[in-house]
Length: 189
Ligand SMILES: [Mg+2]
Image 1 (cartoon, helix red, strand yellow):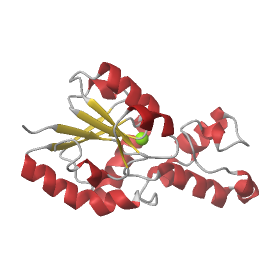
Image 2 (cartoon, rainbow, N blue to C red):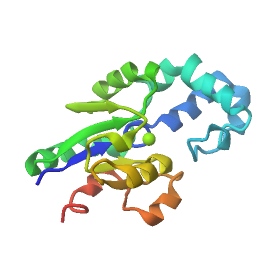
Image 3 (tube, rainbow, N blue to C red):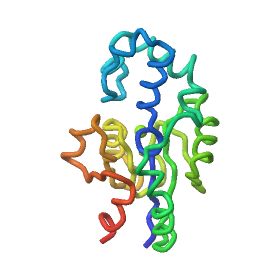
């Protein structure tokens, strides 16, 4: 039977944290050496010279077009795997559904980004309540989103960790994939 497979955008398809680090280095060269490796969705963990509010302002107000737009590179393995994943889903009767927690001002720009890089989802949900979306599986990088989905998913769905260096704890308790094509044969035998 076909499954509905939810796929997150940032940290799974789009290399947002990498692009934020690059953008800060370009616009604030004086901070370049103080940036740490992106290791979390808590900005202050790796942008130590700004407060959480200052980072929010920089990312979501002052620079969001550059940060979320087509200058933001995709996660390399995801772009390599997309056609293969789509073909497999079609053959097996599965549906690929975007489930992404964008803010109001980044939704349209995310639509454009997805289109530009060829992630042609037929169905997209922009919501912070990912657990409320009708999907059987959620592939995500956020420990918080994965944890809530596992507990509250309306379909009693399976949370799958897209491996990143900020979700090592989640990897211990949940199925984990290194790249999108890894779900082929993992979940479905
Ligand atoms: Mg994410």
